[in-house]
Length: 192
Image (cartoon, rainbow, N blue to C red; front, side):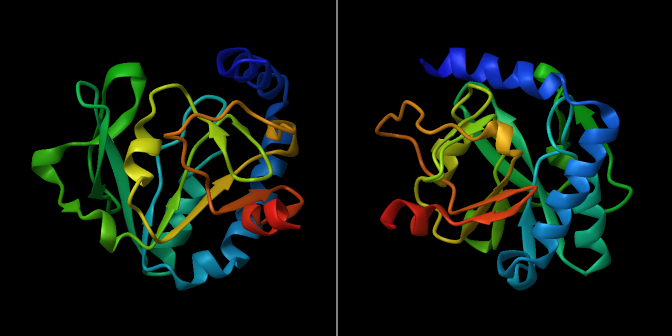
């Protein structure tokens, strides 16, 4: 199955999850994330502002602030397909941009260099157990992660796991997958 067909199939599955079930899955995902070593050692955390079928990141942001972590959120540059992360503090204003994404307002926020970010929560739609993912189709994160050496995690329901997904030379795997059942370490499973 090609990437766009797999993406559509999994999005349809996610849309069938009831709000109550989604809230319970998110609670489990958040608990596993907050208990992880990646979370505990991170002082600067990169995360998106979730919407629609995506797993809620509002609680992640609030927990990070509560623990004194710095939160950074991405601004997409559609022409170059680049991401720039900006500090996001409680009370900061966001703007709704293309695709209805909520993003920082660059002249009101401070950009953070990639090598200063300790942990990136990478969004995605479909994943395999080796950490490869199919995102929402822009390729922004694969470009950003090319030379990123620190921790990456993705939150997903087991319904988002595929045995195999089509890979391309520029695809960058996520280092740690967290499902409602707990952690899946892609690098361990690929060498097991």
